[in-house]
Length: 381
Image (cartoon, rainbow, N blue to C red; front, side):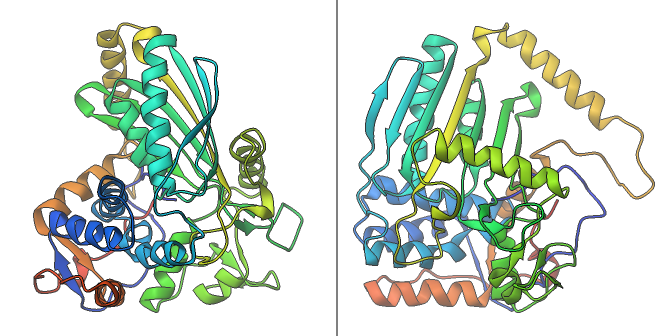
């Protein structure tokens, strides 16, 4: 998962810029990814949704959660670990609370169904809870909480992930990054949203550094022996460190209670990551949706949110800061810039898409010259 950024300075250094690759218009990239998925048996509507989640991650500046993951999904579709046709079954329906079974379908498709139901039920009951079992990795959690926030709701989404960190005091990974997101409408400011893993960094950013051939910052990870490392390969074989020491571990543990144990899905070391081509994910999610109108005048809520954002942004600056940002603001700016200038794909990412296209006989679109290196950096908190 990603972290919806709130700082404008002192961020850890990003992975090295990708080697010269391709610049692709967002709509062109969406169309290509959609076609690559439909060629592998995914219904067009579902393929378009999955494509949009990946391209949106690119637009937000989170290439770690973008189209570099498409080969992972393609491999899982080929093995049958992830079903091409997603069948979401309602197991329990008590009105405000639902339990869904994703039957090992596409996590993004399952989660969008949960969001649509959650918003619908929150409209009727004021608040809704949707538990999801037997789903899969869904990309960026903020993609889905933003949908609910744009519909006038506050949304909280929790998921679990394959083991990445050791419990505090342990040396073997057994707990996932277990990301979560909260989003709320914010009047003239649009939507405020956080999306974070409970580790020092989302594991996807380590994969991104590995793909681009660079080191990772100190403090992100340890190797299999528990020693600090800046080598992404050693980090992936070892441990991603928790954020805020034991606090990150404790939060991640409790998120697994919500997303895994409570929902009836896999939990702990039984959850399988999207980079595994052969085993079913077992990931679970828990979504809470609150209709703002059930608790407050929507006009009053919007005014209060605007006041909070304005007061936060107008605070006195630290010596190192250029400005104060609120959660999700940096991603919104990146989206605007990348929609205007196009999405830069690293040469390695473009090569993987070309390989998938060759397998399915899908023509590649025309692309532009590479961006200057300063425009290719990953957004970091």
